[in-house]
Length: 253
Image (cartoon, rainbow, N blue to C red; front, side, top):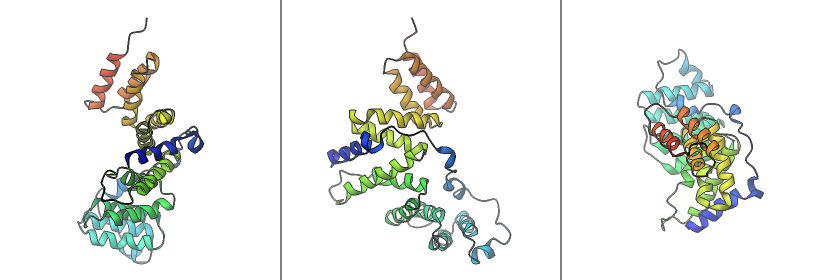
């Protein structure tokens, strides 16, 4: 199965499949709705319940957030389900995350994948990324999972879509998958990692800097290591890595 996985990744990375990765389109991608949803609201908005009962989908999502802050997961699911029934991709995405994470409700990865898939099918980039990670990081060596190859392929395709849309976490993940696939995918891997690093993805910036240091191109290595140094939070492991990589670059003659 591992050989099959690498073959599928190599296929995604083949020039005929993606050619050169396009420039990021991150400006078109809004913030991850989960960041706000899982942060407790200050207080309930006046009239929120009335608007939610009247069918206002954003009010239903806001009320679900309020329910979750009060540790009432069933209530959160109820209102997200109301919005999902009318095709709201944000509600589908958040409902999928609730089930996948088990926040306030019993964890159900199958239900989580189902709702994430509904949102991903509507082009919700964050859902494409989350479901792509779930599926592509499956334990594909487990002989008890019969449909793993198909799940892996779907996961990689979703990550591929999100990466091409300019979503930096997906670009980083695609870069790692391409590196795992081997030499045929190296150029695409470097392209995706660079795009993610250019958007401030510190994990990707580390990978770019590390690979540049070992490439023999001192100027590129220094620029990449300095960028990592700028992006890395003070006192973090990546800040230490940036210092280490700068120390490994040969001095210019």
